[in-house]
Amino acid sequence: MKITFLGAGSTIFARNVIGDCLCSEALRDSVFALYDIDGTRLNESRVILEAIRKAKGGYGKIECYQGIENRKEALRGADFVVNAIQVGGYDPCTITDFEIPKKYGLLQTIGDTLGIGGIMRALRTIPVMEDFAHDMEEVCPDALLMNYTNPMAMLTGYMQRYTGVKTIGLCHSVQVCVQSLLDEVGMSDKLEGHRAKIAGINHMAWLLDVRDKNGVDLYPEIKKRIGACLDEPGCRNKVRLDYIKNFGYYCTESSWHNAEYNMFYIKSKYPELIERYNIPIDGYLKGCVEQINAWKEDYKNMLENGVKEHSRSEEYASYIMESMVTNTPYEIGGNVLNTGHIITNLPEEACVEVPCLVNGNGITPCRVGALPLACAAMNMTNINVQLLTIEAARTRKKEHIYQAAMLDPHTGSELDIDTIKKMVDELIEVHGNWLPKFN
Picture 1 (cartoon, rainbow, N blue to C red):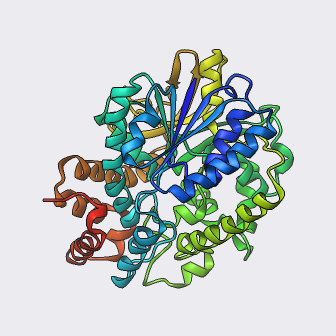
Picture 2 (picture 1 turned 135 degrees about the vertical axis):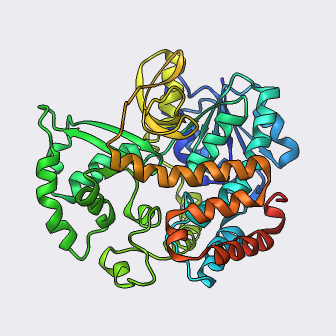
């Protein structure tokens, strides 16, 4: 079996996913093909993964492929492909995504999923993923592509609608959703054996139902406790708890992310909200710098002291591969097209995050039905932006980029139309060759 990792220079993530595979008896003898355009980062991943492979008994084989000219060989004959690329990197593209909007008075926290940052990231990533698709259709047409790259719904939705590659979008926020809530409200004792139903869109999927091991609905007690949490200065989940207060349900992704997915919390006329809700403006920029520095230190330590062990993580990828290979049922929260209205009050073209059954037949989404109206309405404010960004990538028409930015809830609530267009034009100009040409 062959497992190809695109963007293997994402060393920490490659270590988790490939390391997880080496923990699985069904996967550990695979050929692991690592691909990246950055030779230094690729070699760092190779060194770490070879150490893990040896620590796990020396199973399997690791191959490295650097550069676009070798990508097709990295993919040739693959059974599974994992995507974790970041086109343009932190410097220059992520910096550009933050600094130019800031000139126009538009503040962001993460900028990788929605908002003007998410739009730009999608537009420079989709053409690269389309090239991946062309290669896969030629050299591994039956492979499953597992996409971890953000903006999840835009990239996965594009691949599912406009390529012939079998694609599933994966995000770890579903796995950690319930624990983050129960820990926050002091109900961690209810975690063991709990049951939950989660559906919506990536980074804004809703915890529709949560029950303890005896089937007791936990939401009534949770709602009694959120007031005290919202009053706590150190609470990091205030936006999501505020969602429960105002919309009735908790959502999957962090408050840092969700603060910029709507028009409520980052507002120039109400600057006090930033402190009240613990919103980390420019948090992603600061986090990238910290992560880069931390990785340098971690890599140095691993070279000096060796890699002793790897414990299987919560990431879905290895469990999906194992389930399909062994025909053992497994449930995930996956990002799929809403074909046949899996969620009945969201459009079929939308990429939705829903429970899916995995087995030897592949991945089968489970029908959800209708979301609560307010939750569907919140999702639609994001879906509108996602669909227009996909349309911009498909048609190369700048008007669709303008429309996506205009309809983005945070951007549209802060800036007028002329300013939005001027900002988009400047972003396109500064990104230069990182973006395709738009008409």
